[in-house]
Each structure stands twice: as C-alpha cells, then as structure tokens.
Amino acid sequence: MWFLLAMFWCRMFYNLLYKVIKQIPGLIELYLVITSFVMFAIINSFPEFMQSANFQCFINGIYSMFYFSLGHLANMLIKKSHVFPVNRLLINSVTIVLAIICITLCMGESDMSTFRQHIVYNVLASVTVTYLLYCLCNRIRVNGDRFLSWYGCLSLVVFCIHTVMFRILPIDRVFEILFHTTNHYIVNSFTVIFHICVTILFCKISEKIKVLRYLFYLK
Image 1: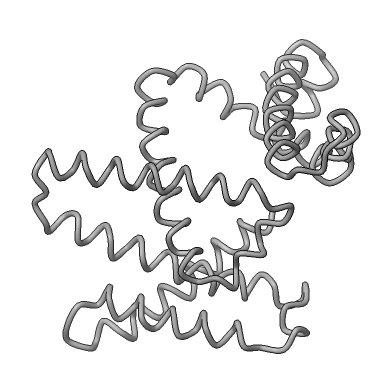
Image 2: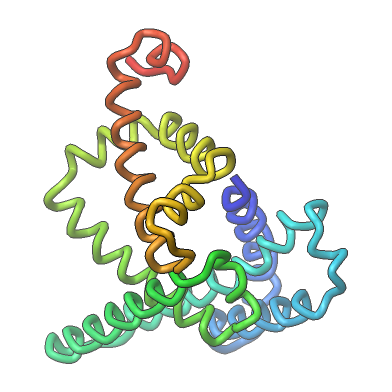
C-alpha cells in the first residue's frame, strides 16, 4: 500500500509548495516542476539510511511530487495550446510507441526500481506510460463499463489475492523452473498474465462462496 501513502504526502507537500510559489509572478506550474526536481535530486544524494522504511513514505511522496508537477504542467499546456488533428495523431502515435518501449525495458528487469536513479528514463517512462494507460482506460470505459464496475466493486478481493501472490507465493520461480529460463522478459510476462487470470478467477469464486462474500463485504 506504499503508493497510497506516497500519493497522500505528494498532495500534502505539493499543496504547501503551491501556496508558497504562487506568490511569485510567472508560470507557477513550471516553477513547481523545477522546485520539485531540485528536491528529487537532493533526496537522491542522501545517505542510504535515509532510504529506510522509517522515511520511505515521505521520500516516495517527494519523488511522486516531481511527476505530479510534470502532469500539472502538461495539463495546463494542453488546455492553452491548439494542436491540429494530424499533429495530435502523430504525437499520440510517438507517445504510445515510446510507452511500449519503456514497458518492454521494464519487463526485462526483475526490480523496476533500478530505474529510479536514471531520471531521464524515469520521466520518459512515467509520461508515456501514463498517457498510454489514459488512452486505454478511455477506450475501455467506452466498451467495458460493465466489467470495470464489477471489477471495482471487488477491489478488496483484488488487493487480497495480489498481496498473496506477489508477496508470498514465488510464482516467478515456478515459471523459471517450468520454462528452464531466467529471462526476465519471459518470466515477468507470464507472471503478469498469470496474476491477472488468477485474480479474475478468484473474484468469480468470491462471489459464489458465502464465507468470502461476508469476508470481503460483497452483497
């Protein structure tokens, strides 16, 4: 649940920073990006003990604030600029291709956090993949409202089974043995697909069993 704490402290820090910076004339969103980047860089230079669990929620909040400010700036620029349909199609295509490349690179790593130190890649991956997810979610919302509503009502079930599989069961090790390979692209891809399938199956089972319906507050 670390990302919920990160989101909370991100908004807290961001709101405080916004109140201070808005007093300065000029493009407030750009000032926020620069300031949050400086904070991002300073934290990266901290000793290892500052990365301990005692400080992690605050540190993740400040890391997240940098990307949040980038999104705020991008949203403001999109609203103020006029992009022709042809250029918009080109921008969308390039962004989606870059997002797929970033996802592919991440899937080749056993620990995606290794990219944290590579700020340029990190920003590129964050912006492009977020935009790709935004496009996919808009498409799914048009064609899959019913599925999303059902899946959303079962969020406790999803969190439960995800925690068990991700933290307790060594599913990736099973695929390493099964396919006789340690290639992260193969192992991680099959692990993700397996997690999705098992999660949906567990959601279906939870709806049928009375004890699980009671446990997860399902009507």
